[in-house]
Length: 192
Ligand code: URA
Image (cartoon, rainbow, N blue to C red; front, side, top):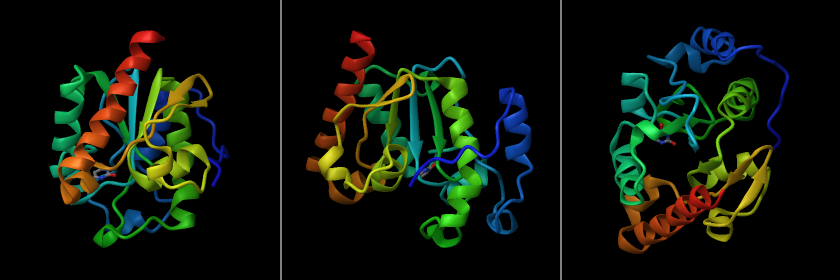
């Protein structure tokens, strides 16, 4: 699936204003907060997840629940702390019961992510999990095939990895895989 560019924003603030009051899909009826991002525009690393969960919806910040805590712990093991990462999701609002995002939700929400990628222009983008990785790379290849590899997107290198929720469910081998992918991220940052 392609990222659509049907809305262009001249400034980051324009995008932010639009996102925070968005009513373009029905998720606006059930969300508590729009979860746009966490982090600063000068971040060298951008993490992209699927969609906010319950804790994120509650707090208005991405990856603050159990998955987020694991994500940040693994990043800290490669020497990168939360403040150095710009964190976002493909969808900015929580799907009820954490169901899969629908096509219409994705297409209505995608201009926000497109703008975020353009304005941050990170050295490395790390989509986490199958959904975000397939979406960012416009590929049908599953995460087990593409994780840890390098791809080019605009001015950034994309290195997909597994979702921290998958690591929480699958234990040590999954965690070792994620850590090894993140080591490729730190190597890319060092070399570029
Ligand atoms: N899972 C995601 O993909 N994103 C979040 O922000 C939290 C959990």
